[in-house]
Length: 379
Ligand SMILES: NC(=O)c1ccc[n+]([C@@H]2O[C@H](COP(=O)([O-])OP(=O)(O)OC[C@H]3O[C@@H](n4cnc5c(N)ncnc54)[C@H](O)[C@@H]3O)[C@@H](O)[C@H]2O)c1
Image 1: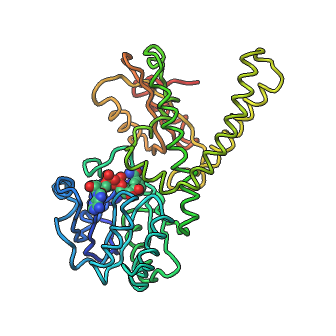
Image 2: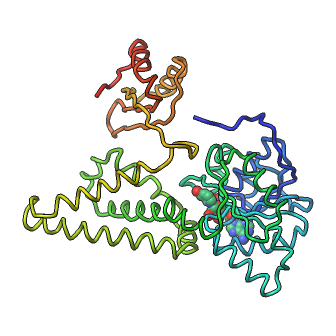
Image 3: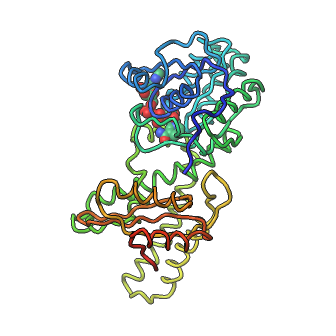
């Protein structure tokens, strides 16, 4: 598990002004403040900005002397706030962290066209999008390590000032981001596939549970939890994201709709004529196999090449501190946890903890945990 080192040298030259101090903005403020950069905070909501200040994300202020302005407001108001920031801070570099990029850039060009911005103002804007977040919104969920090891997409436009691009690159690196540079449309197409369409499918699937009987819900296991985790996301934020990236998301969902229609037709035939109906098995198998091929293409942690890890599964008592003890003892055995999953059914006194480790240390870890009294589950 990784976390930014509090004493890492920071190259960002502040002061930095953060507008929008919810999850993303307060996380930026916390990380920069921890690194010793002066941060001022503003938000349309007085209570949000006060909470961010109280959590240590920076000081309240208008950021008059800011060198960099980070706009972290919902996507549907991002362009307007960026326009205001470019005008109010005539020498600062302005970046935003919105999850959609083409629509923001198009609105900024419109602001140049209607005279709210000059072409020179626009050179000080550099779009960006840290691919880091969580299901909860607001400063209360902020975390200075939110961006550590996560891709941070830099989206300069053709007239972005190279010095501004460098400043935003430096900021992203200081916050622990792994840099990727894309054009706005490339970014939007990519996030439609890896973030926006998955959000819709997770939400639609979770919505099917509304009518499920209690006895069905009681059987819910890790598979359902895995595919519905992000269904807890904020509807207001996500409505703005989906509408802001409507074209690429609609295109992908149309492809899903077509594949789904084929599978439904095959399953309806099997339901009517029996499971051995010609074509039914092939259609079901093709759907799952194509999924196997797709999931194998997801890179490993920190965006690197996907690696195969060995899984070591241990029975963990449902008592305070048990997981902490397990983690500590895995550490004492000199093993790094690459990934972790916990399966726990209500009313059970134990859970199944699965730690993913490098294959070469798995056997040694199992033996070490055996020796320390853990019940290791071997397949
Ligand atoms: N949540 C995620 O997982 C995630 C991940 C990456 C990027 N983003 C992007 O980051 C941005 C912020 O998302 P968040 O999750 O931090 O949302 P959030 O709801 O936690 O915070 C948004 C903040 O913006 C403030 N705000 C709204 N309108 C404003 C305005 N006109 N002026 C000043 N402040 C205003 C709100 O009061 C709120 O405090 C969005 O554009 C989103 O697309 C979110």
